[in-house]
Length: 262
Ligand code: PEP
Image 1 (tube, protein in one colour):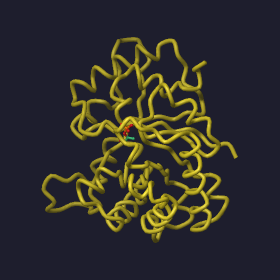
Image 2 (cartoon, rainbow, N blue to C red):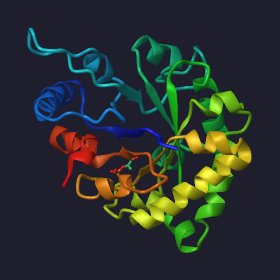
Image 3 (cartoon, rainbow, N blue to C red):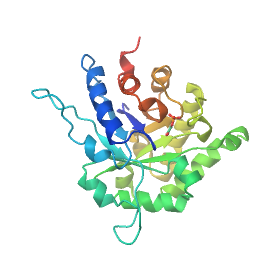
């Protein structure tokens, strides 16, 4: 089964409208002489305030508009109402976003998002045209205690509750061991492959093996230009969710053209 690769940069609380504007210019320059492979998709999950400035961005007259698909880092599962400071799915849909990150460990750990909230967000996201990217993964102490597979199974089972088979085909999964996020400690390609392959078996149990074969499962955790190619070379790893190394256009360009590396 050959699946597409999907590289998503998660800017977190970095890069406002001005930096985003510069990033687009720089990325366009970086990619001038570099073709992105046909089976590689990519996107940037920018802060809400930067997103409107990044849509359909075209710089120089007469130059082909550079299209950068966009993602949201967060949203509220309710449609509208008295939720001061929150952003609805409809608002994001109006911006023409393509992906929605759900269940990132920073949202789980710093903003108390439980599996139940993650599930509500996922079910709400499935009513839109945008593709949910569901993140999951174990903490360092769970990893040390050999509980990676138990955590993956529990998180996927509760986050994917009430998801129908035809809806699962729309979902992207992102295995992100928490101990590897923003720490510079990357899971070895073998560790990442093992955990991602296990997640695929969980999808097969919860849905069926056909869906499990098709689902795109990314790896996230200190992915950078120096390690991306080896990680992407693993049989079950279909892309990356990248924080730090996506902030700079040169580095992001290297990530999305990983297949060109010698
Ligand atoms: C992330 O934010 O999902 C992430 C993996 O961050 P980093 O690449 O910086 O570890």
